[in-house]
Image (spheres, rainbow, N blue to C red):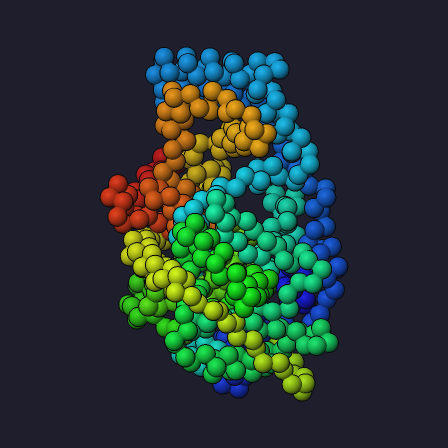
Length: 549
């Protein structure tokens, strides 16, 4: 199957065009990695048709009845509040439910929105409104199994089917948003652009090397994808032309808090050269980052260090500037064999990125070589930026900011091999339900949608959401200090995400037949949290729960 036409069209791909440098000297493992089905072509229509075969037949996200949500809300609050607080909230709920009242008005507005959209829940802008840096707080990553090379020479040297769950097809819309997409900074809220859906999608990937950016066209003039050998030639050109280190590391600006980055972005695009460079990155299919080697660590520490490298690049002295953190999808290959990705959560969920990851890692085992065209290749385009004094000052601020995040972010990894999905299923239990032990978020999701309706329609916020007692109660119930997510992987990839707020934990976990893996993150300077202690508590709980079974 074709990879590159699919990538350029922004349609769900089998894998990214990972690169290499020299066909005859490349390590065989990396050669297989870069050969991931680059050699055959397929029409854009066929891929789109296959991937989205069942899309129109899928049910839309339903809106619960207002009565049901309010009843569940009161049941949820009862264990947490005093009698007088619950009485006050019941009064507010009754007022909210009055026929012809504000609750009914908001409910009808939400139902109209649900009728006109595929998923009204996805319209909320929590990720885009968050002004914290996307590094650690928003983007998630995958740490892939280590590649079998340890130097620069090794480093550079079919359509995706429909997903099913329980025999039923799943929505594939996010796959079309995975490529040629980018988050754009704004002063109060960010936006996301999906260039893969345009009439003329990009034919290039962005190659990050030595904190510099290059546009690498991955098609020949006749529309056929470049062969692996051609990609090798192009990479040699890039690596030999980016030896200088005096260039300002513009990529590190994407690690700033969103308001600071937005102000810098607005200043950058006033210059024509800068605007063209930024547009090229945003429109490109994806970013491939060729990282320099990180400091060596003992083998038992490698996995944790690789997780951190994929999350933030290791700091301003290492690879944090060799990124464009706003891009929907970045693949990272280290000179020392480090391998993984960094994904913008505002563009797609972790499970979608993991599905692509599994395909890529499976494709590494396949090899398909074809002769290269003798037509001369265009020189990869280096992107240039005109840096003013105030932008240079912002770059220094970004270096300090990312280094602070690097020092503060902590990950603990639990490899739990006492039992896995098979044991739980044998005991007639849902594996995810066994682990998840969380409040049903559908109730909170409905109220959130109603709040957004009030904001969009310029309706005064109902007392049920703003009353002092109600806010206090909601704080007790909805003040989540822990975010958890199961991200299935068939390839041994570790999913990882940072806490979405300074005070919170995050746990990503993968369940396999006979074992489980948990990646726990927290900030060190928050003395109320400790990732290592939480990891141990998870292990103890799993062992205790087994004794009950």
